[in-house]
Every structure is written in structure tokens, then in C-alpha cells.
Length: 369
Image (cartoon, rainbow, N blue to C red; front, side, top):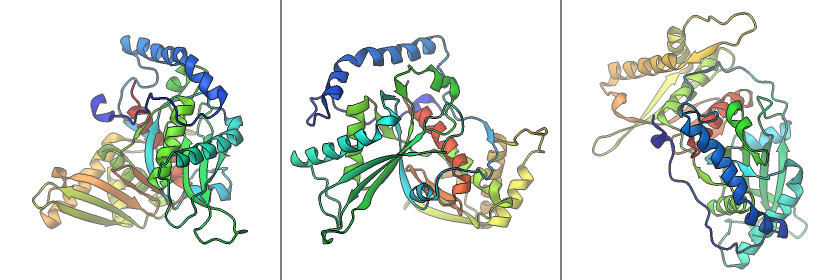
């Protein structure tokens, strides 16, 4: 896939005057931030002119990756509960300028004030069934890293009271989001100027109006840009293979695919394969494990493509429909689900790191250079 295919239009923040001043530091920072952004772009641009883009030399997905394994995530049970069993909308975000993990309490107050000020300006931020007052909390998700270069994951919640809540009834979460970087390309991460933090994958769940406000605040505060992160056909196939590979340790129950075929009227096909049948096919296309002692086994793109061809051939034999002519829109197993539109759900925390590594790679590739 070409770089043009991988890079959609960005959700650019407006250059108009901020309607809601965050604080004097934020306003002053904008006036002198141009040199930092130019420094960042010049470093990237210089490498590109030499044919070497830091950390993103190929502008395509890796053709080989580690076979998934049950990770010992040190994240607390309470924090894991916030991440699994929820369907997240994916976005990519460019590096954050002068974001500090030690300032989360300040950011909580600033974003709360920002939302309140936007409401006063007449912006509709209503959430159905809740009162129209919101409180924001930022927190760190410690243990959600794969390499020393990964920045610590940041979780955000917006709270509000139910519409007819009693006066002493506590607020409840009405929106959640988090920024993360799992096994980001070290060459790229180390090439960034020191004032930039890279958390390229943004996951959100909740009212679209609140999502837009959170993005707007980040853009104004840290001079970043957000863009939609779809999950490409190739990435969906990778997830199918990676999840099926886990069958020997944790049952995937079934492998379910939803395809769309270009006929009139459009035909949607739901293709479900029993876990053992999927495992048998996957085992038949797996190459012999050549990993030495202490080394990790890997999965190659050729194996993924062979697995997909086997699934298509089986379907054609039974229904005389060629799925190659269609588009793969959704895949799911007991470990999780993913949609081409950019939705992901983690159903088993043991293997979510493997999935997040792929999504982080996709987010980095989406970012404009």
C-alpha cells in the first residue's frame, strides 16, 4: 500500500483565536512554539530528502511480527476493567508538544474548565440522560509498555450525574479515552526533539461532542493534530492470524468475518469458522519454527496470506462466491473484535498488548511526515 493510501485528510485544528484561554502559559507558549515545530519538521524533512525517514523508512506495515503470547500485564485490575469489554473508536495523534505526565491534575482542571467555557459559548455538549455539568480526570496506566522508549499510557474520563440524581449521588463516567504507544518504532521515537511526547494511538468511547472537545483541547494545548484511524484490509487479516494463533493457549471460540461484495444490491456475507477448524488451517500454513533457544517465534505475512487464501477457497467450494472480489469489514473472536471503520474491542486482556502493538504501528504510519 502506498503512502497516499495510508494517509487520509487530517482533522486540522483551526488557526482562529482561542475562544477559551487555558492559562497564561498556554497562550504564551503558542507564540514561541513555531520554532519547535519547525525544528521537528526540519529534522524529519532532512531525513526524508536523504531517503531515510526516521523510524518510518518503508511507510508500510512490517511483514513479520512476534507471535502473540499471554503477556503478564502489571496494570491494576481496576484499570484493566476500564480498557476491556468496551468498543473504542480509533484515531491517530501527532506528537504532543510539552505534554508532561507529572501535570495530569492540572490538565484535569484545564479540560474541565474548557468544556464549561465551551458550553457558555453555546456549544451543545449534552449527553443523553445526564446533567449538563462535567468533571474530568486524567490518570496514568502504568505497566502498559513494551519497550523502554514507549511513553506511559494516559487515561481520561469525563464524569457527570444522571439527570434525576439525588444531591449526594456521585458522578458517573460518561466518556472515556486513552492515548498510548506500545512498542513504537525506537528509531522514530528517539528522533523526536526532547519537548515532544509520542502517544500516537488515541482510543475514545462516548458522545461524539465530548470527543471533539477533548481533541480540540489537546490540539490547542499541545499543538498536535488528530486524524481518523481506519483498520486496513491487511491489518484485519493480521489480527485474524494473530488471534487464531492464540487458540492453543486460549480458545477463540470462533473466527467470524463480515465481508461486503460489490453486487447490486450490495451483498453482506457473514463467514463464521469453528475455532478448531480455524486452528487446523492455521497450523497447516505455519512454517516450521526456526526460532533458537531463548528467541521468540515470529509470524510472516506469507503465512497470513496463505491462511486467508485457505479460508476463501473453503468458502468458494461451498457457496461459489469469491470473497477476493469483496472487502473485509470486520473480524472477531473471543479475544476481541475489529472493524475497518476504526473500531476495536479487547475482550481478553492477556493478548491486548499484541493487538496494541499492531495498532500503534498503524497509527505511526498514518501520521503525515
